[in-house]
Length: 427
Image 1 (cartoon, rainbow, N blue to C red):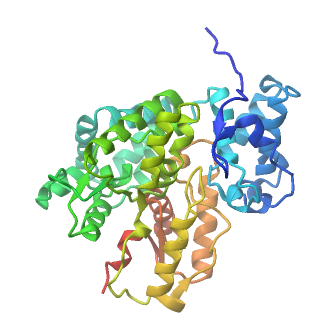
Image 2: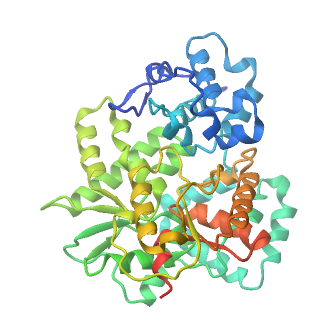
Image 3: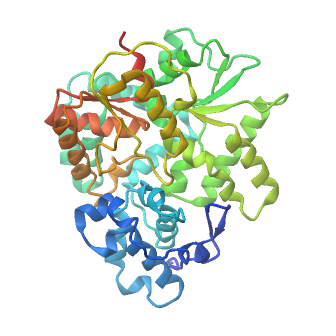
């Protein structure tokens, strides 16, 4: 049975004064053009339909029934896929128009499955059965020790079967990947101490790809007792690529777990992912029509912290560095401002304070979506790194760091990309 394609005007999206209906949100656009030059996909395509203003007008016309999705579904899919949901348009907009949320609403209305199906099933396994997923990941790492060529060949041979994404996954993986649970066990670190002081929600990449990020977070949080929410889904994956109802259910489980841990007082909830931070800070919009749940979600949002909330006290080396705040859905905002202050304090004149690139790096797995042109945008970042002779790029997103580092290894090995937690690694 064919699913009905319909864009709901009553669905809620974030706004400066709180959640508001989609139809009201798109009407806030004054078409002032402030967002256009901030959009990476527009800078590449130079077409109005691929600008934030153009995308917003498409949604408005669909809601007003002046055009139909069936009129030109290929163009709609192309403009949706090209959007990195980087929220640079939202940051540039005087009315903070949430164009990424408008794109998500259109994506759901068209029932688009943007991630390759095998990859989506695998990621869902990580949310539902983390123990089994970790074993699969460790098995993959074991075979990877024999060299990268077998995996790359497998991805090429099975491209027609929907497994071409394996090649890209192999390209961005760190040279020595590790899983959080295994690393913490080797370090004799308890994931669930009694009477914790703070709750740590690791990102997907810190849990399964680069556990050193999670270990560094744990070290920075000492001497506090850190409760690690390993294997706990936040709902972000489903919110971006799947069923919004399922995303709400997964978020509810996280919310209930956090409330249970803070029976005496609400514990701070910290994460190493700017994507998770933004999603959880804006989580009350999920319950715009449920005041009780909205109040509870707001309590969690009020206790959210990011890496840039931590104190960095050690002296760092004097390499020329830059900060990349690529994220999805929501601007990094005050988290990025805090990070900039930290880097300016520690690196001084060696910190490239201004935006070193006009192009966002694909975060939250968007590089695996066909037609995003993510590879071109990463190459533009590499050009800027080389032009400015930057030696280290620190990212607020672990996946963005992996994407950029893979391209740097190929085109400009004099520089490397790291997560922000590693800024203190060298004396």
